[in-house]
Length: 457
Length: 174
Image 1 (cartoon, each protein chain N blue to C red):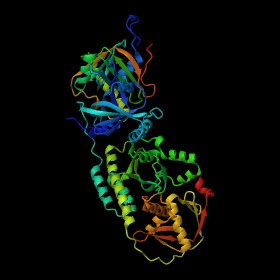
Image 2 (image 1 turned 180 degrees about the vertical axis):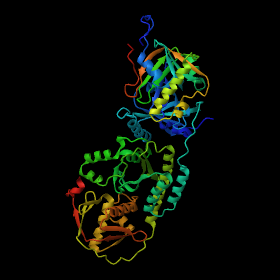
Image 3 (image 1 turned 135 degrees about the horizontal axis):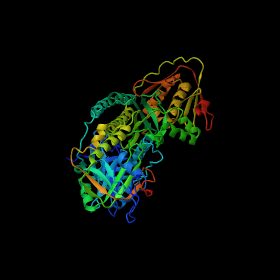
Image 4 (image 1 turned 60 degrees about the vertical axis):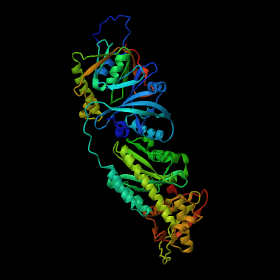
């Protein structure tokens, strides 16, 4: 029986390097060991083009090739008949392979040697199982379909956005045994992602940011493709990439690193999956593990399916919250606020907000907070509706599709994590209650105003 | 090797491999792959399960399992072309030999023992990078089937260690 390509794609993970034969126009054969083989779809694979070598010369002159790949657990071997079609030097497949190759290079001591010049795409026209012994495959870790079903059921039951994130992350841990995960959402301007929820880290990192295109997460978002690496690599490590960007961009970027991105110090396997709905990118679901090769093709498929459902549910909850009728609740009696006043500073240039010298948040969430505390101080209001915030000209939501609810979750969590003297709670459907235990002194700082020292380290 | 004949007929070109390379491909537990091509320019490939090098290094014989190597054997019989690659898993040191006069031969006395020794050395090599012996044995299992030798005169040798210099011809042995 001829196996299907998707049934043997574990063989393409590279635990045992593939070996490929090509031949020149004069018939001279050539054999090469491959550092990377990538499953593209049921009929195609991609091989890394790193150097202009004999294999490269041969396939350009004669596109026929034969490849032997080996199953990493059973030792079974399969011989594939290939025909070279084309080379891609940019785009999702290229970026996927480039990230993976960086991991492979780092794992095999070839950093600086392996560099992806292109993804060579081949059509697979025949697959033959080479006769020989095979070991029994190890028992599956868990049924990924059963895990997917369980988490899907949970997502389908979510009625609120913050529960949607926490239930998804709980489900990943309980059903997939994925202990380190985070959800990041795309900023309305589409240039960066911010962390909205995480699991399995010392600090939640909620509010931390990643520019599009940086590291595994940023590349997955920019290219709209899952990025999965099986070995740690400095090239895609966050600390380094983000620090470098901050250094290059000066003070404004220094704030971006004020909230550190959560992440495992000894991360080995990483998988970032774009969250998409209605044809646009909403964010990224990211998981990682300290173990090498923890996530395979099937894990990637399961998380892509899950991210699809997560995105669709996010969108429908957002639409429901925009449509829902406001329930007017009476303004509560003013809460006594005591003690030394807290200095609330707002910097207009990036909407960053500081409580005394502590950085709280910036961007849209910062402008929301500033509008709330101004109304609170100037007119004694404590309750606000989502609808009025959405229409408030002081809050510059990047566009109508921006997820206000997500910004409020972010703001609420930041206030709670900072144990701030100001808190934001839900007060019925579509309404918020602001509580301040200490008097607030508001200071608006114009362009170029000096920041508290602690934020500029 | 020290006991080589001291006078070599001048008409015979020098072998591109020396004693050190001969030892590398026969005893270092390297991964062995063999390619050929047919008249229609279709390449073929199989895995080797050991090899023998003549004492003067002029003839190399790679052992393959016949049932696993039908296309390669057909192509070798048809075109006599061969490429054989020897790669050490722990450090990626890789050598490629090419030949134009390959023939399929029966095993000689001592070859079964060479295959057995290769199995041990290859298991030790793969063991060092985390593969158990059962896995390695599956990789080079003959299933009790026929094993044949593909013998050829290396006409060129290339350093195939990964990197930008991969594919460069080796300097001829001293």
